[in-house]
Image (cartoon, rainbow, N blue to C red; front, side, top):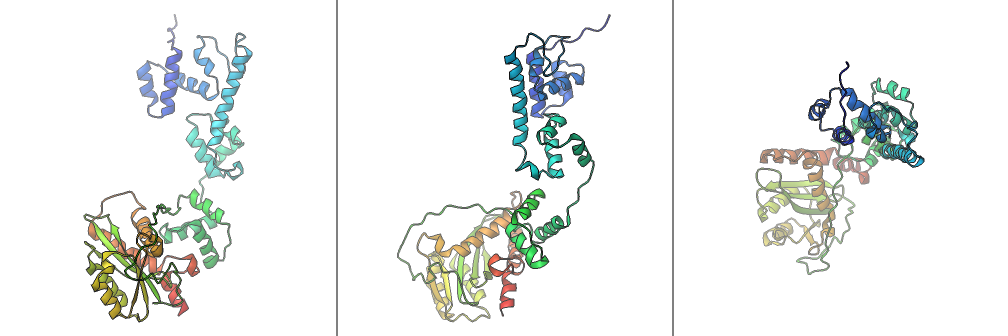
Length: 387
């Protein structure tokens, strides 16, 4: 006499399907929990679910039928419900198709099928995205190498530490390699290989409006300069990445956005800005130069104003509470944090590593980083070419 078959309730079958879809349990764990003897039983239930035949979960033993060929007692409403379920599954698959289906390159198709085949059959996925199943298997057996253009874009992004966007990559391809591509093509390739630059988060500003300044605002948001050492901007920012809080004081030349001097300190006393200004003036002609800052206590101090006057510098200050009056240096401080410190998983660094990273980034920014406004040249390259 044959071995008696196990009978599983519809509730058990649906619970097994839920556990499989969660991807948190193995077949062995599910079989042990519900006393299922054969893994083929789980596979059969999952196939019914994928094919939109959930009605079969409640059928009695021995009464087998497939989708579209149900028993006579199923009326037209039940048949219609199964067809609707089948269409819903197709819709769910199509939602995961990126962009236009015409853009489904082999790599994307393979990635899509691999991510969905635990829930839906390969045939159903391929049918929804209109790719023959045989074509998918042929693609899956190949190893895909970057094209010449893709490799060129990868090399550009790698050389610039993945800190430039697709617009800059497009310009560099034209300037350095005489290759014209649509910026969306560059963007698609960067997205494909996950080499996009990190987007700086936009922060909201609350403008307090006009206020009485310690010295006049001579710059008035005119951030263009005709020659080096004509207009400088300066500011202090926090560096909360090391063992203790540190502060970065920077002076930038608006002619080519070059950082002419910077200093890092464990405090933000006036000595920090004095040392930065002395370093900036060393070996440079500063008579008549405009130096713009905010109304921080360090810049309104007598010591700072006297040193600036001694060097022939004319000081200028933003309106109180108006960050837009000093937007260029504010943006630079946001950029160094975004590109150098926020690009990796957050971790506590030593102070010496923070100092090293600041030094490396300053060199990269002045000598390597290309700027659109400088014809894709770095600040130092632009100054040397202009000279």
